[in-house]
Amino acid sequence: MLNETNRKTTKMVLMAIFTALAYVSVLLIRVPVVMFLSYEPKDVFILLAALIIGPFEGLMVSVVTSFIEMFTISQTGWWGLLMNVLSTIAFILPPALLYKKFQKDGAVAIGVCVGTICMTMVMLLWNYLVAPLYMNVPREQIVPLLATMFLPFNLLKAILNSGFTMILFVPLKAALSRSNLLLQESKEESKRANRILTIIVAGLIIITGILFISVFKPVLFGDM
Picture 1 (cartoon, rainbow, N blue to C red):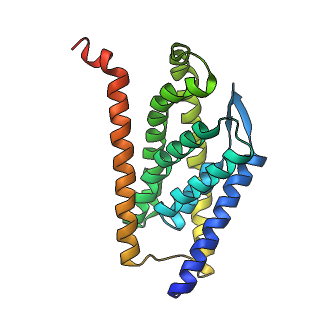
Picture 2: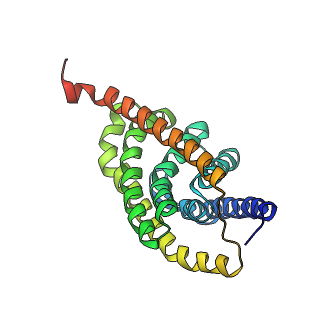
């Protein structure tokens, strides 16, 4: 078992490796799908980081990767950074939290299904709100694209990334276990990470809920 110093060093090294893999995957594997939307397997490596190191560390890998991407290759600036992080949070947290709680591969399978649904639905709302800002078009032009472009794209992306993650996770976990590199959180670290994740998830749910009600209030409540 790794001692405390080696465990922290190993955690930082693994986070750096997964960040590098996530960024390189964007550079080397970018498949145009429709308009400005391209598929890249970045979330595969971010989710692997969240499963193997921890959910909070996975989020840190996402944020750092998104910042590097924004300052190097992204053309959408801060809006792209926001969308990348929101998309990743919705996708990786369900499987990462379920696996952290149950420590069973089946929890990952269930989690990626939940994450796929969460990411698809969350990105529908946020694309409706944010896409007009970086596409420089009226919001009315975005509405028809929600069902015909954004929904199928995000669903396809999440399904592909879920499949690739499931293929890679078990052999990668076995390899790290044989190398004595699997990490075990201390109870204090686990409690602190859980508090931070609870705040992040609660904040995302509250903000998304408020925006959802604000956007769709005329449909839901009429002229009330």
